[in-house]
Each structure stands twice: as structure tokens, then as C-alpha cells.
Length: 311
Image (cartoon, rainbow, N blue to C red; front, top):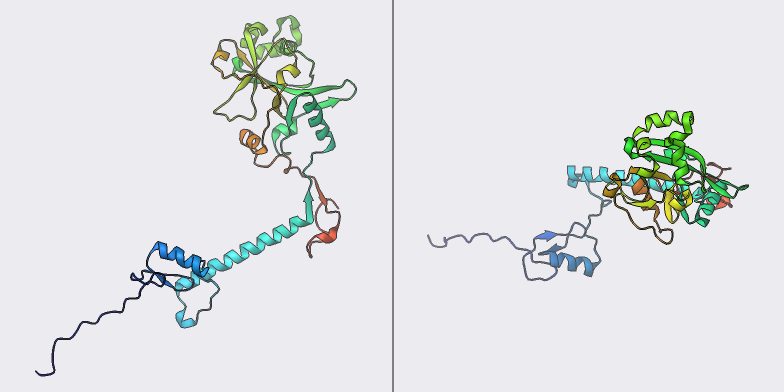
């Protein structure tokens, strides 16, 4: 009939990119709802309009517009607010306290005396067993370091012997003889019984090594120590963690070890390197529980005055 014809198909309006104005828009900015067509235009929009591209989580939504997605988003937002508030509370409390990063006087003196003898003594956190059992001290009368020495006899399945108050002038040969020298008779019979393989080899059939610290368990390195030398000679220009550990190997077994030449000075180490090698989860100096108040309590945030240790 006249007036009737084919209907033209409805064409949906295609929104073009709000940045380049050429291509059809594919994306909408969650922050400002600007339409873009590509990653290049998204980046250009963020830079030109100083837009973060993140939805305003505190934006008002009316009830008819509120969806389940908005509910979950608000829940996460409240959890984040709670986390930030809790972190601010902790920081305010820690600002009231000043953690003393220095060692106690006797340990500082011990480290100083060790360094004057070219030994880099590292002190571990108080929670570590090696720190708890260490009895190393400095004799002001004799002007000697009195070390706690740990001996690991690898020919006897790594049997461990710890000796306290060993002077730094004691020779390695004399120290080993206390436990494996048959001429000592009944004085060391109990040790010789447990250290049968080392006793059979004798001091001449053994090699003594000091582990290079810090070194990981899968990449152990050693410095060789002269059996006829002193304990101080064995640990000079090395890093000692709390107290020396001497590794005793059979001469033939020591051939498979990795020995490094002894450095001319104490090697520099970072605290994190020692933590990795020892398994410590705290920083060495910062882990010490010596806490004192700030000199001026008014420096602390309000609400925390008069609280904390060390008053």
C-alpha cells in the first residue's frame, strides 16, 4: 500500500572514544566514567585528567542503585579502614617508646675487644639459643678473651663438645688434646670413648676448619686453621657469631671441602646476611628488649603518656 515501505533497522548510537575521538569506545573509567577505546587512550586520560582510574569507594549510592557488588565493596572498604586505624594506633604507641638499638655495656665491650683482635663478633637476638648459652667474656686481669668454643668432630658423626673459658692464647693442638690425647689417661677417657675415630686418627691425622660466616647451608665455605696455632690465629679476620665453632675433619675427608684464603681484614657483613645464615627472624641490634622512655614524655601522642616499660 501507498505510504508503507520497508522499515529502516534501528541503529544504536555508538559512543566514540572521549580521548582520541576516532574509534568506538570500549571501556569506561570506574572513577569518572569517561569512555576510552584502548590502553593508550586510558593512560592518556589518566595523565591528562589526573585521574586515578579507581572507583570512589565512598561515593553515595541511592537505595535503588545499590547492588550486591556495592555491598561487598563497602564491606572491604570498612575492613581497610579498620586496618589503617589499627596501624596508626600501633605507630602512635611505638612513638611513645624508644627502642635502644645499642647492646648492653658488657656486650659492647666484648664486641670492641674482639674487634681490636681482628675478630668480627656478631651478637644474636636474645631469643636465639646460641645467645642464651654463650659464656664468652673478657678477662680484664689477664687481658685475654675467654671464649666459649664449640668443637664438631665430623669423623665421629659430628659429635659436639662445648668448652667454656678458653683463652685466645690456647693452641688448637692443646684444645684437641684435652679430648683425644691418650696420654691424658683417665682425665679424658669418657671423651675418647665417644670420639673413637678422632682419637684413632690423632691430632696429626685431623684438619681443623672455621666456617666462613655468613654462608648458607647449601654453600658452606671454610678457612683452614693451623693446628699448631692459637685459637686467636684460627678466628682472626673472620666473622664469629656469638662464639667460635671449630670443625674437625679427617685429613682425607677435608680434601672434598671448599677452602677459601683468609682475608687480610675483617669482612664486612650486613645484618640481613647473618639472619639468613642463622635463621634469625629478628634484626640483631633491634631485637634487644632494652626499652626506655623518651626524654620528653610530651613528645608522645596524646593518650599514651605514662604507659610502657622503662619508667
